[in-house]
Length: 109
Image (tube, rainbow, N blue to C red; front, top):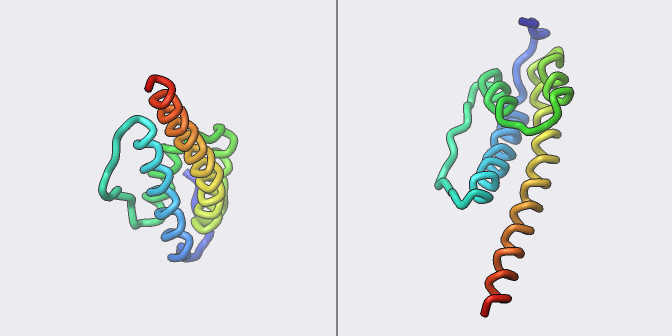
């Protein structure tokens, strides 16, 4: 395992990654007709990094860049950026799915 450079995780980054993951995870569940009232996401920075990294659908090279980042804050920044992209993509997929569902219902009436 790689050791981190000294320093504490930025609480703002932790909060942002948690918020983005909750949005991403909630939309991913909605795509399959599921929902949750709340989603448990780790509060501890290293656990959060591992939790999110295991659930991202990003390319392996992107995930590797998280692992190779020298600081916890840099890992969180990379995951934040990846989550922004993935959350936007999955939101578009959900919107298109809903539009298709409503179009299909309208066409059968």
